[in-house]
Structures are given as C-alpha cells and as structure tokens.
Image (tube, rainbow, N blue to C red; front, side, top):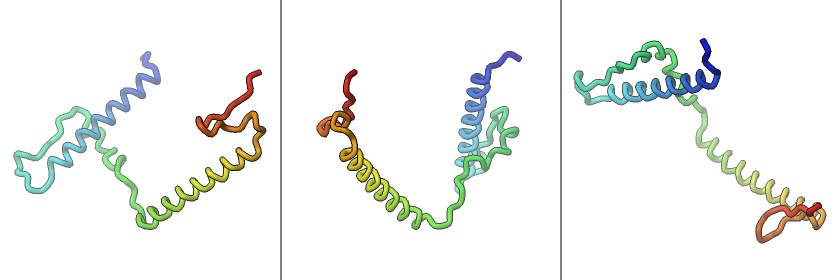
Length: 112
C-alpha cells in the first residue's frame, strides 16, 4: 500500500468526526418522549466497529469546580501581576536603545 502518513491521519480524523456525529445523533434520538419509530439508529458502515470509542470524548469528573474557578481567577490575576513585574524589569534593565516604544509597544532594535 502506498499511502502517506498525512493521508492516513486525515482519514482517521474524518472517521472519528463521522463517528462523533453519529454518536450524537443516536444520543439525541433516544431522549425521553420519543416514540419507538422516532428513535435514531445509525446506519453508518463503521458505527458498530467504532463503538469501543464511545467514552473517548466524555469529560473527566472533577471534584471541586467552584474551587477551580476561584483558583483560576487568582492565577490569572497572579499572572497579570507577574507580567507587569516582568515589563517593569525590562523597562529598567534594558539599554535605552532596546527599550520599548511606549506608543507602539514594540521593542526597538538598533539597525546595524
């Protein structure tokens, strides 16, 4: 077989996307309140072969989402503070010819 790795990768991605689409149709088709004739049953040729991947896209369980939100907010403010400290450090420790132009926020390098 003379198939490149790139073609194989594209085919795998395409097959996985098709499986996800069929899995979502099946999941939505079995919701409550649907009659037996309204339930979606996939006829895609590879659906049964790909069923071992059904739990692949499920989100992992987390213990404390409220604490995670608080930690993320603290982390982002901490990162902003660190970034500001770093910018101040650059301003005071770079030679004048390498300091940033305040109007454009670009570092100016001397021409050689």
